[in-house]
Image (cartoon, rainbow, N blue to C red; front, side):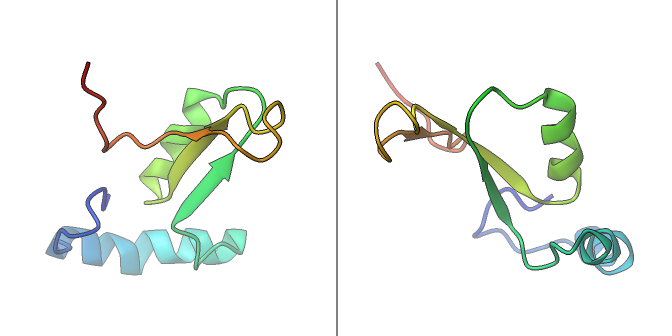
Amino acid sequence: MMSDSNAEPTLAYKIANKLLFHKVKSALGIEKLSTFYTAGAPLNEDIKEYFNGLDIMIRELYGSSESGCLGIAQYPEIEMKA
């Protein structure tokens, strides 16, 4: 999984991407998808883990319907400090 956009892909990742990720993504019609946004009810953890395993980051949007297009997106790599 490539969680850091600045990181150089490892050989194992490149092989997995060529042999597995690309084929599964092509079969689902999402071969160009890298980030997917969801809104509404919280997404099941199993679904997030499945797509994360295919190297697709899922971001959850909160408050998108209540705030009229303004909301909060989930970015795990950004840490909030008190």
